[in-house]
Image (tube, rainbow, N blue to C red; front, side, top):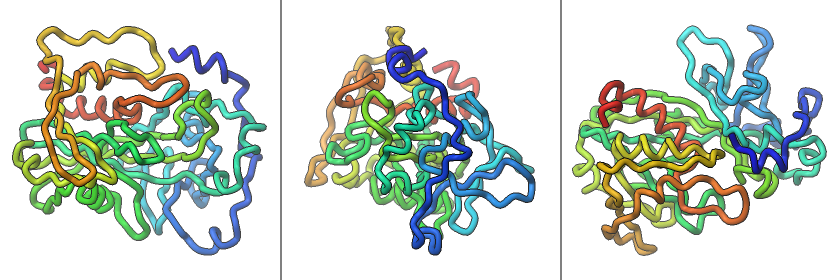
Length: 328
């Protein structure tokens, strides 16, 4: 378990049901962006806009870090509820999620512009090639949130946009890959409650998202897709195709735990990566597999690693492979 940070921040959890942040009048009169709305209490109750300091996972599962929910995008509102006729998907947060341990005094001291943000909605695309490799991208070092961290392509959902359309748009904007409807199948994998900075020991929360992970199964091999890559250097500094064998090692490096990660002897010690220059020029290099097993640091500057939410999504991806993943 994550002891070092929790020892600094473990405290009585605050019930924010009576804690209300008044949104500006213009933000209530007109929808300016898609944010999370919650529905739980009664079947006919109108979904309520989630507050920035409200734990989304905790709303449905008390102290649990993973729950099952249903989600829908209706009238530019991303609605989560704990009932569904069409099935549910997992919603998870990190064991050290800052919102989970945020005290009342810390919450009320956040800047008004932060408190009025609500909980934003993001979409991330796990692009699986026909030969069952998955595309990850390294976020550009100039980005303010999670720079140099490996994630699937993705971003915010825009107004009047469907989740899948948002994922396809972000995939094209970040990597240059444009998929036709007849070239892929899609599947909603799960949701991740993301907060930045990811730990209270690294500063007060500045951003709060629910990220929707969508699996796209392409009919093309990773080499065919690689030939069409044209990443945007403002967003992406590198790309890599990972297989189930590597992914199993990556997800074993659980953020918040301290046990050592064993890299199997039959797994290559390096992996080929496509670097993206500031001028969008591509070059091939190699990075150690151990780099992808880095864990989120307790404090100080972040390091190059696979994000915690991405590890969650990768675990869900392995489950879709079934027995094939066990053989990897």
